Amino acid sequence: MFDSKFKNTRIPQFYFLPLSFLVLIVLGTIFLKTPIALNPGATISWLDSLFVSTSAVSLVGLSTVSIGEVFDFPGQMMLLFLVQMGGIGILFATLFAALLIGQKFSLTDEQVIEATIGKIKFVQPLDVFIYACFFVFFFELLGVILYLLGCINQINYIGLPDSDGKGWALMVWDAVFHTVASFCNAGFSLYPEGFIRYKDSPYFLILNSFLVIVGGLGLITFINLRYWYFWKRNSMLRGELLLQTKITLWMSSILLILGTLLFLGFEYNRTLDDIHGFWGKCAASFCQSANTRTAGFNVVDFEEVHPAVLVGFLFFMFIGGGAGSMAGGIKVTTFFVIVMTVWFVFRRREEIQLFQRKLSSNLIRVALMLCFICIVFVVVGVFSLIVFENDGFALQQGQGWLGIIFEGVSAFGTTGLSTGITPLLKSESKLILIFLMYAGRVMTFTLVVYLMRPQQKSSVRYPEGYLSLG
Image (cartoon, rainbow, N blue to C red; front, side):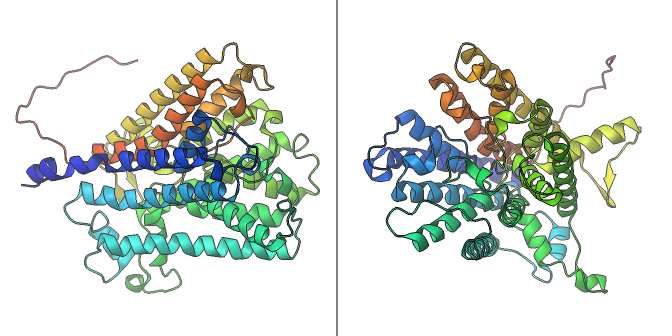
């Protein structure tokens, strides 16, 4: 009964997320091309408008033009609207996936209900969507307030150029734009040099890191932490952290620390040399590590970064953030499942058991399939970029081929970091990046929804076959 219902009514809804993102991208492209969106005397091609719109909806942050110099206030508002809708769309997709996979929405199973929602027997999608919107606007409002406090107290605040005596208005818009972009993990900035201007301000660096990290944790993690009363001794009243929450928090912390140490170790006497004090360098390294996996704000000029750091950051961008979050990549949970699968196979264990829970074989297959398909997309995309940019200006920049590879992985991982070659790319390469950004945002989630459906059981059983491996 369930299979028939799934086949008849739920498969058509499967295409809702990719199509809705496409519609949003098209509408954004048209508006960003209109004169009302542009500064006086500024122009933008249809391809660049499509590129920026796709980057905004996909929460990437790559841009072929300078946002503050090309777009006027209406254009910047539209850009921020696209980012916000792209972020809320991902949260809505989390609910959509749960509805698509199961007959009723109960946050996947009884364990999740008990640990996350407490005494509520059944959770309606509208209730969780309200939770999601609350978390989004709460953290964004908090970020704006803290950003403005830093601006008012002049904590190394530079701000936007005030040419019309609208200092306060520009300060508020500065805070709103960068807060939303940070929380939604879209590395757009109104500053031509990005967050480099704040590399000597630990206050703004830590605030940006906080918003980026929170935005990359995921909806289920938010709700679980909301109902986890860790200070209570009674386990029944305290609640329980879900397996997904534990893995997301542990993996995010480990990757943040590793990224900070990598960047600090190689860049201490290079791009971080002009930052005052050891702790100032640590704050800049931590901020760059937080942005590398998810958002894409740059604290230093990545054209001057050590190649070893770029190679290491390729893996961080590919992994990404938490499932069902604003972040991209294959997600930390997928990476963790793959690593644990390798570890338990090496130890010759029949089952993968973590935190007193057993991972299902279907979950392992989905993780491996997702990782494999993402690798194929990245390899094909990077190969295409190399073909088209073989004699282009982008190849002549400081990082050479590594910069082009970095650009492709950044686009697919929806990170937004760049070595500065984005405006120099050929039209064909820009189209490839547009496809990679769109695929990196909607493909991973869509694949998970598709692969996590109930499996079709075969009525025919064949004898096992054996192959020689290695």
